[in-house]
Structures are given as C-alpha cells and as structure tokens.
Length: 107
Image 1: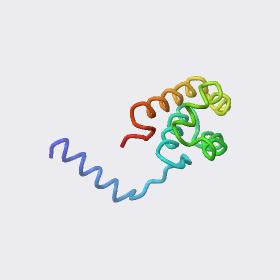
Image 2: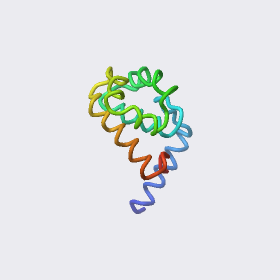
Image 3: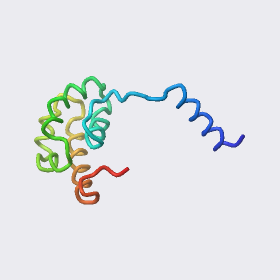
C-alpha cells in the first residue's frame, strides 16, 4: 500500500467514525467562519463566540469590515488577545476579498 492509498483509507475510516463533525465556532456564513477561525488563534472558541455574538448580527460581510476600518474592528474585538494584529488581518482579508473575489470567500 503506497502513501496515497493509505491516506485515502485513513480518511475513509475517519469519515465513518466521525460522519458529521460539529464546528464549535458560531458563524452565519463562510466569511464569518473565516473571521472566527482567525480570531481563535491563541484564544478559546468560547471567548470568540462571546465576542462575535454581538458582531455578526450587524457585521457579517467583507464590505462591513472594510467600512468599519481597523480601529473600530479593534474596539469590537478588544477582549480577545492579540486584538490589534487580528483587527489588521480581518481588515486586510476583507479588503482582499472585495478586490479580488467580489466579497465572496473562494472555495
């Protein structure tokens, strides 16, 4: 059995054991899931969910975060560690998605 066949077999077994793995990060669409994953670095999923529950109802698309700007994003996520770096990353990612992908998360 070569490495490729072995990987496929392992994936098949894992899919049988775990057919539907839940995503612990709360999100409303692919973009908010991407933001939540970015926020989860060096942070618990619970903390991310607590912060984003007040953000996602109002801001859930790249255009919203670009319009907010880095400083306002920082204020929204201030209780999360590394919030300045994360705010910059969210802003730049949102800007890139708007410029290159018409605001959609590529698959």
